[in-house]
Length: 121
Image (cartoon, rainbow, N blue to C red; front, side, top):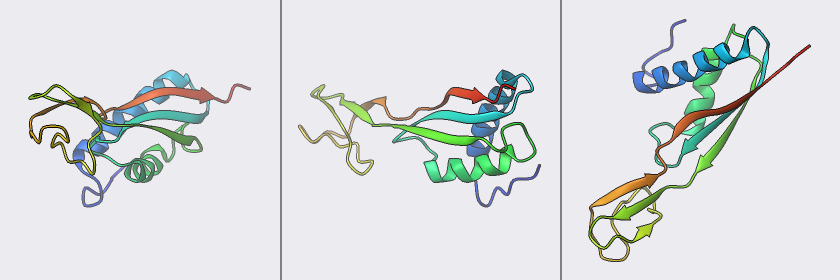
């Protein structure tokens, strides 16, 4: 199947293709009814992009009719200067406590398969 790289980055396509492959392996030839993903607030893909790409990639597979559920994880970073933890606003990593730009991302970059549900006859 051809997916236009004008609409999606190769990284997005490969990440979701890998998730779809895992879903289909776990399905063991049963239709997939629900797919539960975890997506971090700072992930390179958005939930809208994932839904569009999922519809394209799953077409013609056992996951084609599945409902895609996305659980969003809030971003959390830790300042490397003052060690305070905080939620970055508008993807700005600057520390609200000391103004430093050096921060370690603790959560929010996730994009993974959490679980699937199958239609067992």
